[in-house]
Length: 297
Image 1 (cartoon, rainbow, N blue to C red):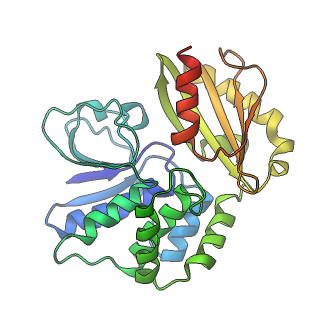
Image 2: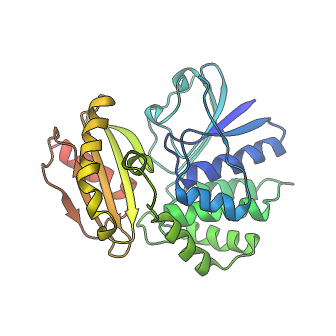
């Protein structure tokens, strides 16, 4: 049995791709089960409800010696216990190639597109005899709209837009209307505790030998989070100490202005005050390269 999963603290792309890839593997004669590596965020719950799909079970086992298929990541530090000793037989991703090293050759697709779901659509749509259901088409569409922030992100490519158009047709929905509803769900932080707010979208990185967590909170405007900043800063300090990090980085992004405010835990070599960037939406394409630059100077 192949265990299919995305990264820790999964976003919609990781969850939706895990579901569709496991279905595709089963349909092509390779027994597979989708898993999640953390709690679902409100946006992902919205997508699963719209598609009337069940969330994958939480992965609680050590995957050492197990057959696994990775989607949306290739950094060992973003995966489950035992990943370095597992048998990775497949990888579909749209990030830089991470710290994964495999003992055997694998099936791998890594492309410079805005969303892993774009690649998944391309792969499964070219498989003879396999047909995406409207529900799974909606999941992939939602993942694309999420990762590209409704095509606003600089990571967006023509391939993402084309895939989204085709998936909207397959799922029988209005693309514009669905995009607005998804972005409303994406920026909904009501009812989330401070720890859960940070865990909503965070990833582990090692940059210039510095062990970091980079979290991102996307909101409609900065006003939506102003009263929580002090508590968030305290939680960032706790997490940095508990996780043994060199420091913690939080990217708060206003979708209405396309600005991001970058916050750091106290013991960091970059800044003791928040840094604001105009036209910054992407952690992968904008924040990570900036951190690489400042940490290597």
